[in-house]
Image 1: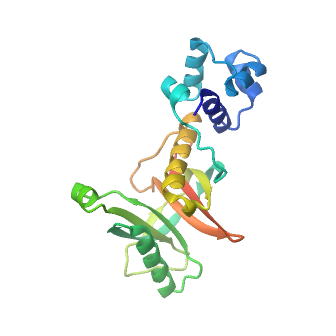
Image 2 (image 1 turned 180 degrees about the vertical axis):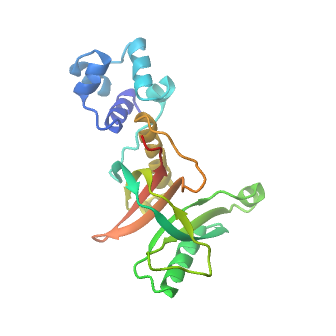
Length: 230
């Protein structure tokens, strides 16, 4: 990955900043920005430091890292306010827990007469090192968002007030799940940092979650990371 590709990626992630807007901030011409992005020239050290400060990254990341996930699979990076949630959840720890957790919640929803249930999920972090290193297990937690008229008594109901999230959409995430999904989290993390947002790890708020759905015969996954309201 080149410096020019990294710069173009960072510029677009910064609220789709144009070359003209970046040139004004760097006190250079638009043609200079174009040359940097084409790797036809490199910035002087002073300008490189200013770029790293502007985009909240290190010089090593800017010059040497592979920052851009250059894939048509990622679309529509945005900030979204998620309405207040009521949900029930179920965790599975195994070598492949995702399908088991999601299918369990779908079956539970069906038993309550919930049609087309909204299912979300996230990694379950509370595993021992033995489970991870020896048995190669990981955990996954799936949840069913409850309609207003559903009030189950057999399972704890979790609640969350409306919350702001940074969101990225993946097209056909399961074509290469071990590449596309982790890289989507990485890209979303850059988006949060570049735009001066702050992550939230507050109790009672889902720090992140995933939602898979189908539209016009295409599978999509939305990934959400909680951020502070600015």
